[in-house]
Length: 356
Image (tube, rainbow, N blue to C red; front, side, top):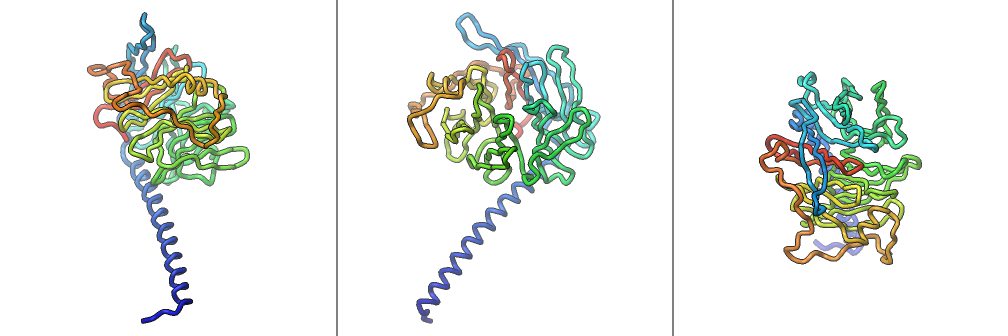
């Protein structure tokens, strides 16, 4: 059979339309599958995790020391996602109390008073689950990731810790996994999907900027008066900790992660901590990077949107091991959070397999 030229052109258009439609369908299918799998996971019991506090100090040579682990959670269920109050007086975390053991997939929000060594529930909702608690920038409530009654919608909400009433801050976004505040009006969101996407949202204007794709779950605010956040870029075989500046839009590579690790946190001086196995590692960025990180203002002569440091030499691990916890109560840990003064660290432990 022979086709005239117009028929060939029409066939090409049809083929192009089909390919675009197929591509969109596959992308939507992957996204819905990711959401469905997470929703299914919400019906499963949450992992049995605990939170410990350790003291941070330095020896005579200035080497960091992490000592005297104390368990601050007393449940046999899920206690996770610790967040420090700005003055270091208390920790917020998501937990499932023993009295809620009938539904171990539903977390509420708790507050641990560091000095009094007392815990109380601050957000207790019977029909929904709350995770990732952070004090609102204006201190009028607690921001959370809220899993709604349908167990598929995950929204970014502000909950009143006196009435337990929660308000959805971004009604159109229902696939929030994690987040970090950039300033009083901007927040960075980890959106569930395949791959996961990092977006920056201005709550005042409603503007949404896509920052990166295929990222890790750990989002951190860079210390100092800035609008910088840090995240793990997993788009290549070498995972990288990167920063995003909400003011300039620039992304900068800080350091390669430890192999297949994505949980990290900042020290007040702009250095970083990350765990692997039973060991804790410390990374101090080069002076120029550390200055930019801590003070948040140094500009670069490079006008490109991404700045990269020199690649480390082969077999040159930039991370220094600062603690070995093998044989202790915190031998198996993953999430970590350092107090604002840098004198304590909260670590999340697990009994068996590392939670995903």
